[in-house]
Image (cartoon, rainbow, N blue to C red; front, side, top):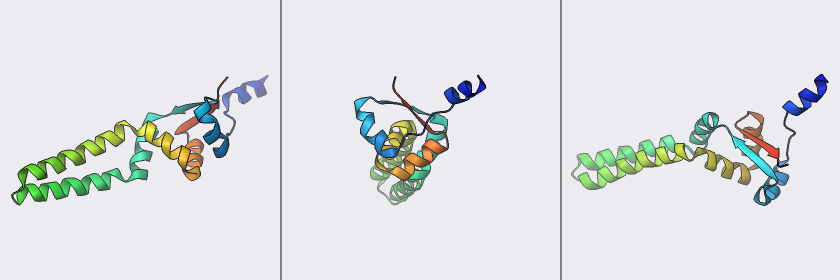
Length: 118
């Protein structure tokens, strides 16, 4: 009886190719942990570095006389960073669909769970 409860608690592994082929047809349910997805996507896409570069260039432009262009670049850097963090679940799913290494990492560390649809 204990083995049945252990079997129902674990999620069987789904191969990447099977996941990639079956997801568009609704064969799998995907659960993404947003608390783990945000740092993973930020680290994977390096959005912090890009946002800091854009904000820095915008600040330099604003200080050198191009205030409007500089302000727009600062706003663009902040908006890009927030957008990536807000859409991290969708970005993670896209990365997992296209890259087998990402799929293996996020399914093994609990960031994303793939279950067969009933």
